[in-house]
Image 1 (cartoon, helix red, strand yellow):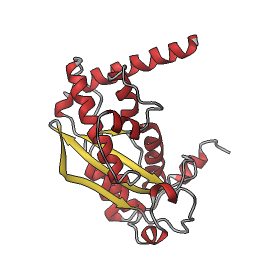
Image 2 (cartoon, rainbow, N blue to C red):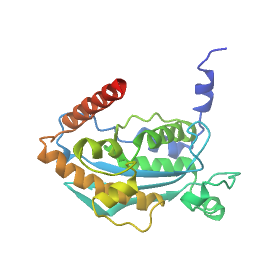
Image 3 (cartoon, rainbow, N blue to C red):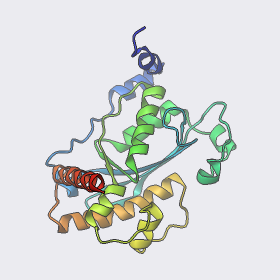
Image 4 (cartoon, helix red, strand yellow):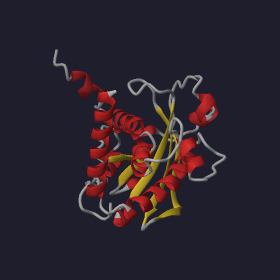
Length: 238
């Protein structure tokens, strides 16, 4: 048996002709190149999921806002709940608060993901603890529409301590960074509200990046890579 057969089977998604056309016409990702940050479409996104297992759990809800020209475009937001057959209620509902009735009335996963990727366009994704959202979105695209995720992700949970090394934020979660920057969001743990909270923090961090001489995607990516290596080296000496 070919060890990659499981990947082929799970990505063999049957789309309608209209869905296939939409998939073919999806815009390309934005490369982490010399494009100025101020001229980049940044899509700040958050996913609510059925759990934290990136191999088994499903995306239930997507929320996203757009940062362009140094501002949050409040008129350009995305929010969608996905239909999931045989959705089982777990303790995760205490966090995301999405009732089974809302899941039952949700949009089909392929159409929801197509909508989201069309909305996102040629962009870089920002998220808090982006690794989780990236893995869940990658798996959702692969299983629900047979699409490979190519868009890069930048982690706000890494940008924040890199650009604010003297900040005292405890465990460094989204709530702690909101408090540090004196931001308030009473609707936390809703995908769109969490995306907006992350976007507000991202705006502050982008301003700090500019002050520190980071003006392009390439420079930000390089600085983050350097910061990760330093952090790993420090941990290795403890």
